[in-house]
Image (cartoon, rainbow, N blue to C red; front, side, top):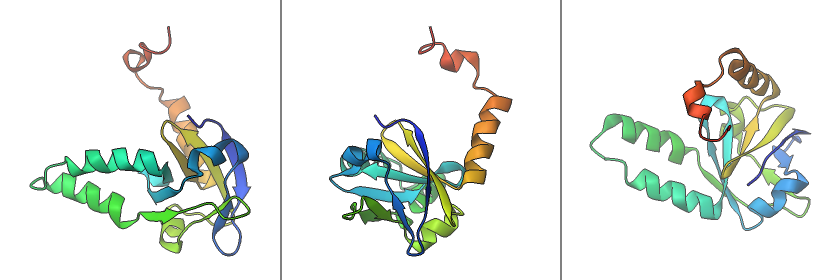
Length: 142
C-alpha cells in the first residue's frame, strides 16, 4: 500500500512527477478521476477494475447512484508514467482539484491522491479539529 505525502510541482503541460515510493504501485498504468473533498484519485489498473465492479453493482434505478457513477466515470482518464516518471493530469481534472503550480501527492489504501496544498492542509486540519469517533478507530488502534 502506498503511504506518505510528497509536495511536487505541476509543469506547464500539466504533468506531475510520481514520487519514487509510488512508482511501482502504478507502473502498469493508472486511472485518474475525481475524488472526494476536491482531490483527484489515481487508481492502479487492478484496483480500478475492483472499483468498477462495485460501481456496476449500484442500482441504475437510484438517482444518487447514477449521479455518483456519472461523477466518477465522466472525469476518468487512463494514463501511464512517462520516461521521467510523470503523469499527465488532464485540464478538466486540474480545474476540478484546483491544481495550479503545486500539488501534494499522498498515499491512501488502494490509491494515490492529488491535492492542492491549501485543500490538503484544510483536510488534515479538519481531522485534527474533528477526529473520527473512537468506535471507528477501535478496531485498528488497540
